[in-house]
Image (tube, rainbow, N blue to C red; front, side, top):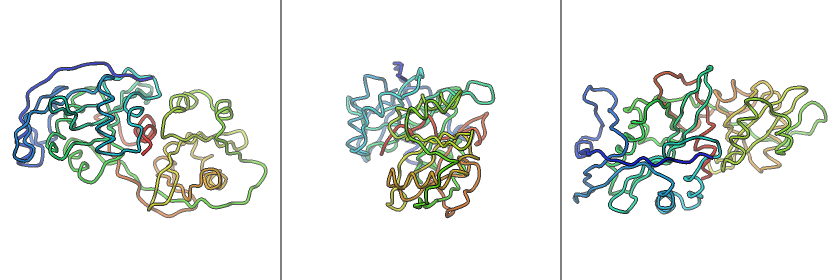
Length: 330
């Protein structure tokens, strides 16, 4: 299980400039320069001058952070579980950053860390999770972002960005991922004995998958928002990870990962039938960069905006595993 190390400290920063001028600026005119981890800032909520401190979220802070998110963001999410740990093994530096005014938590930016093998090299990733700041402390949002980005040697992703944060993230060096997608109706296709089997049985998944794909399953089998399937067609298989979501208030499956796009496309009819009858999901959303190409059935749509920041990796190196999408069931 991933747990966070304690690493506290502070650096004084004056944030009044950012509140007055809106757009964060670096001294060199590019993306804003991230200060060192753990910051102390003088904020000006409304007309009252208050002191707030941004610092790493450690294991000891989880209860207070979870209560803040339950009260201010979503009271249906099990935040204590979502904040406390991830199901894969990782020596995480923190659980993200929080903004405090005295003893009160007034802002939170969660983070999920992972290490993955990319082109033969071990790379470190940080997925920015839920970002919520109290209305009187909105100028402190930048402190949380800068503290997170100050951590060196990470590739960063934001997979649930709203319109407002997208602009801030773009100024901070983030680039958009292509979220072109197809919405596939889950239809009651007739069953045909023979070539394709769809199974959500953990024992079947365990004995079918091998190597690195089996390791991905082990890392995510206890993730709170991840659902798992294996598609077996002749001698080949495909591991599928999806989360249950909504599109225009209708329940759908959002595909997060497929290990074998060819088998995924060949097994599309029995897969969507399974999702309709076993999970009561009316459609399946598949982003093209996740499933390799456009499925033979569906309507072109765009999924939620997603962004990444990396000096070395391109968009093809990012997927949705080891992230908030697999771990936070909203």
